[in-house]
Length: 211
Image (tube, one colour):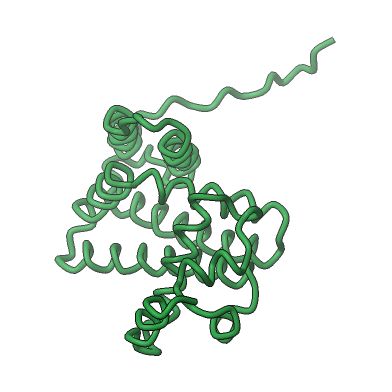
């Protein structure tokens, strides 16, 4: 490590070292992907010696878990901030617009990388499932509070909107010039229809089996 890199590392307080490393890991994973990034790459990005780096994170899996937990915590803080005034509708609209309109391509790429790794790694899968369950629970509860009609089905509404929200993340990652505004507008229109109980019913299967 260069003298300049050592000076950078030395200036970072121990309590902030993990955040510094996670920021370096995020940059590396977005640039090179999870599997092409080595621990040496990560240590170099963080301006730390490999030995010192391993004191904080023993593996790339630990880093991915740290990144996923950090994103979950940021989401929880955003929810708490927007709910502070007690206006659930404003909080819901704020989360949808602020998260999906302002999501950066780098954040979207990292999210897809974590989703991909969750298909292979049980620990990352468990962390991802925890975040998904917390998000689903919050949205379903909020839809129930804001429902304007007895015909509103909060569970069905989330089942409709959840894939659309994921689609915005995927398109943001894959398309450099993607503008999520139109997709967010569609999302909000479906949300309003759902709260009014105006969502189309899912097709039902025929009582008679086909022959």
